[in-house]
Length: 495
Image (tube, rainbow, N blue to C red; front, side, top):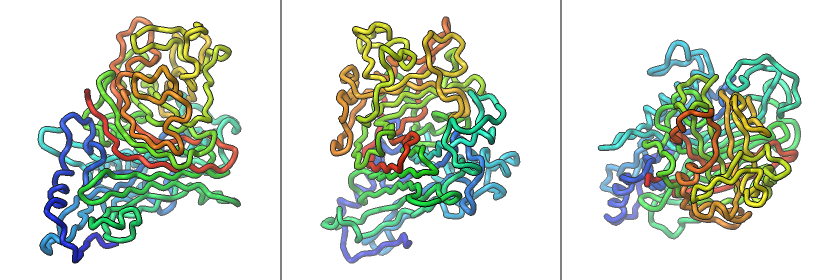
């Protein structure tokens, strides 16, 4: 594709001025690109296996990290056109184990897990934006994850501890190689005056790019194959980037996840024990932040699609101390609002183990889960405690010990009137297919009142969130499913 576009149309000065204005950032925003309005896009891609590692790279694909970052500049022909100055080459995106790059440690050169982590830092350096009086930032992150786990491989630790192989059956896996990385195709962002039906009447060029691919190259079998796609589109100098997502499962890959994330620009993002790069130049802390975004769900992904309007991720130890990379004592903490109306409340008076020990109302009243007259069971899909917590209140359910590099804790929410004060959905179907909405969510206020386990007598942890994301987890469907959605106007503001 050619990045240089010239056209006989003369753009008015106002358009040129708006381009310069779109590069500015808001002083109250926690993200480098408030509302996704910046013409010079920064976006990256990461793929993981079941326990947030790489394991083995896909043939000829390199390490499963890639980026599309560029500046938009006026052409040198008097201002009649624009070109995109890309900061990441396709050679950069194809880097894999055995290929050196600036800053790569000798230890990581032939280790796929360490290599991917350091490649993300390298891509972050290429994409980094440094502005006056603010912290540097790198990119929006597209995260893709495969839920297959070959239990005979012993690749995934149990609550951070290495464990021997165990018999298959508990997790999906078609056999050897089921934890493979995907085939990835990159369509570098280009700029065009034509080919858009949506903007056909506009005399302003449109920028477009994307990533897509499949996991099904080892065991394609018959029928549909898995597929993922994220494309982005924006008019020059106007509006917000539209991130269009598609995710399709297959018989071989029935558990797939695809999210658009605002991650920490340094430190541990939610679910990882490596230094990361991202969009959150200021880390939001409960209760003082809000999240605004527009979500348009086109296809839901079936009954097993745990579609997250917003997913919060962080990490602190059971004694309340910040995480330090020790997978034996670090705990990933997640809270997720699921808006698929087919997702039931597993928390119930007859299933107290699936409920948090108590609910906290907006006026800070505690309602215990055995208070059947007042506890909002329908507001919780599922709560599970860290597998290494030592003082759990019975009955309890512990989280899957294998799908993160360390133990994890989940608080999964459902639309319910109890969340109205925070701007969250109150009724099943809110924000679902056919109900596109712009959400202004008091994520900080809500997250300050959710139950998270902590050892008795310890100082409460600071709830500082290192990942905020939107997307779906199609959780082991027994048939091929497809989800499709659009995210735009994503912003995180410190209140």
